[in-house]
Length: 147
Image (spheres, rainbow, N blue to C red):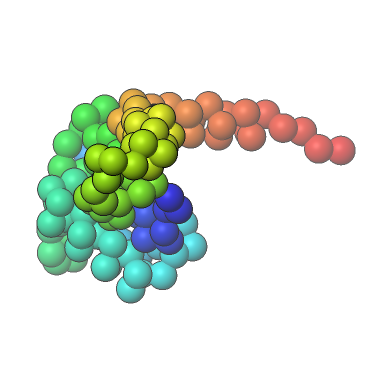
């Protein structure tokens, strides 16, 4: 499985929104500028995120986007699934022939295990977790001295 540009940019934009919103609506243009992502592309991504109930939008001069829930309630897996669809390494709808023990062995011991591992990781991380990690990184970058 490979995360597409839509998934990577969408996750970056959601984290940016979580970091900088402070309860206020944030314009897509400000997110696009900070993240160096096309505003037009972000409009498409945020349309999906809005329809998925992850963000709310307000039109007008004071408008923009805000998270639909608190950052500790939004899981990375939810964001990625909204943008990417199923995160499985193989199509979960592919049937395994009952009489093919090799195929079943691979499904049960490799593909299903990889899928479970991916789900465990992306569902264990919240936007709040990433905000905290970002603050730690930002703080460590501020303490770097160059001569």
